[in-house]
Image 1 (cartoon, helix red, strand yellow):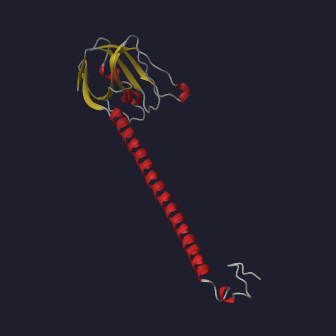
Image 2 (cartoon, rainbow, N blue to C red; image 1 turned 180 degrees about the vertical axis):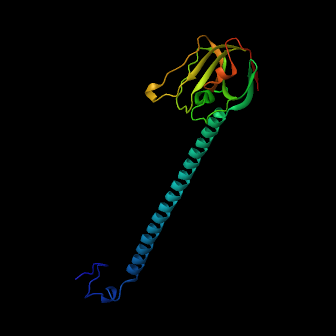
Length: 203
């Protein structure tokens, strides 16, 4: 009868069977156990290493997205923030916010708090054009003063707040302009602003 571990015959060499296990089998089992332990330890280390690499990459990606978002926000903010200045039309002096960037002009007075009677928003363009304006997001009615160079060329009075987005109307100047002043409704009549008035813009 042979032992499954070493093939030794019980009747020939009982000292090499279980209870008196051969030394080479003991060494073999120990080596096998050490190998299995080392393999498990290696797998555990590799998993830990992969996890650490994944975490580091995730942190780097999150930081990149954060920096991009902050950069985009700062760029947008720089374009939307309006400069403070003053403008004289005829004999009337108004304190104005200057919208001279694409972002600032796009935002305009949308969502803006109501203006005082001596306040307005002054839109400045690089070249004369047929620029259209609408009342999207507005909370109060306005007068629009259309300007080319240093002269008022037209006025549009009492532009109302739209009742809904379906009621939005676009307002255009009667001729090409490069500056537009938006003020509270009724200010054109109150201060007697009219076509031909001289316009002086002070930044």
